[in-house]
Amino acid sequence: MATKVYRLNQPKNTATFQLHTNHGRMTIGYEFKGGNQTTKVPATCTLKNEFHQQLLESSDLFKNGIIKLERVLNADAKPVAKKESKKVDEITSPEQAIEYVFNNWGIVVKSGKQAAKIANQKGVEFPNLKEKTNDK
Image 1 (cartoon, rainbow, N blue to C red):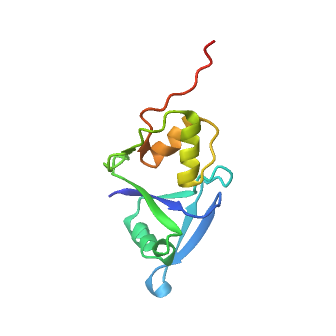
Image 2 (image 1 turned 135 degrees about the vertical axis):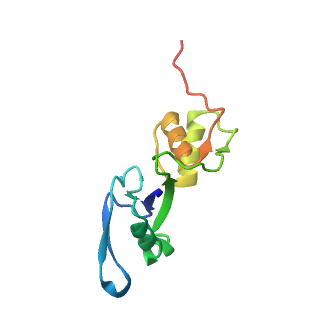
Image 3 (image 1 turned 180 degrees about the horizontal axis):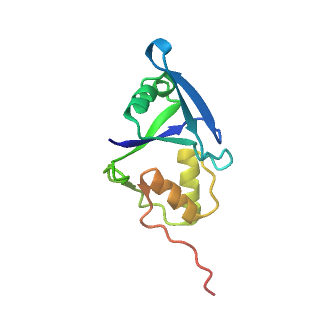
């Protein structure tokens, strides 16, 4: 059985949704947490139960893009193989990396290192990024 991580596409730190099964016989609560409105990190919900996953994925919240599947983990909790990351060779400075992250995902970061981390999470690499050093 795969574990799935879902992302809330709304600027909230936490959120709870109640979904009803067919015929309203059971209500399942889904808690999204760990979000940060300031840094635009989305709240997430991790589900191991296949029934809960199917109920969420058949909901209007999922169909309308309010909730999206972020990643799938196998039973050993290791990421399932995903597509190869996109390499952006023209990013060479921290300033370019910061601008790229902001322009592509609207996320404000203060360093090239933070920008590279966010980009990596989004499946993008900056292979030519050089951090500035204060050598004098």
